[in-house]
Amino acid sequence: MLSIYYMDSNHLLGYFLAVLIGISLGLIGSGGSILSVPILVYVMGIEPILATAYSLFTVGITALVGGIKKANEKLVDFKKVFLFGLPTLIAVFLTRKFIVPALPEVVVQIGAFPVHKSTLIMSVFAVVMMIAAVRMIQPTKETELLEHSEINYIKIVFTGVFIGLIAGFVGAGGGFLIIPALLFLAKTPMKIAIGTSLFIIAIQSLIGFLGDIRPEQILDWKLLITFSSCSIVGLFIGSALSQKLDASKLKTLFGWFVLVMGIYIIVKEVFI
Image (cartoon, rainbow, N blue to C red; front, side, top):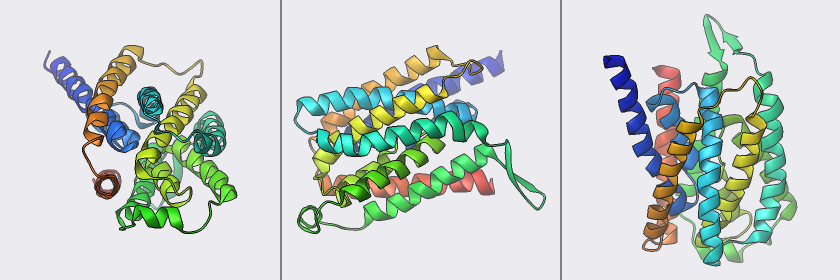
């Protein structure tokens, strides 16, 4: 009885924290997967590989609702959705369908210490988070983003492929990479970058989730729908908050948040 209560308590806490996933997506157009994967793994006790699939579904559905909302507010650049979205969704689908399932349980043996697939995925997740965080924290005026060099469309396409590979590997929506790319490569104002990011995240996350559907894969749809519903509630809270905050402060705040989460995951996976 005690163990059942403990599991139920963890699930209730997980559903409560799922609201934060939506708040993050509504507030800064990203951060959903940065929260969802650790919540699913460390709070709800879901195996990391399956948690990445659940994360793709939750983040994808929540981002889709948010993207439609931002589109109605004229805060989505659909040309950039296509430029990033098409190469990204192809890469994320192929990664989830073929690369992740092909990895052995023990990826490499370092002396007496085996590096398991789940540890590798979470560690790569954390490293990419920290790299993106440093770029976001650096002070950059929005006018500088818009007035410098012309948009390099070829670089955007290749960046989209890279984001898709990383997002598919770690089960992330990729917004923590998409937002910097939209800001620094595509010269997009922060408010529009948020709306555009939500649509890209929705497309690639849901396509990536489809790549996870296999006959042998058992999904807990009740958990998924409840978790995602809580996240959608948070989305509307985050959208309301975003109207009251300055765009440059959002970028810096998000950067620090991603950095702290990345450090936590590295410590958790490698040293604990």
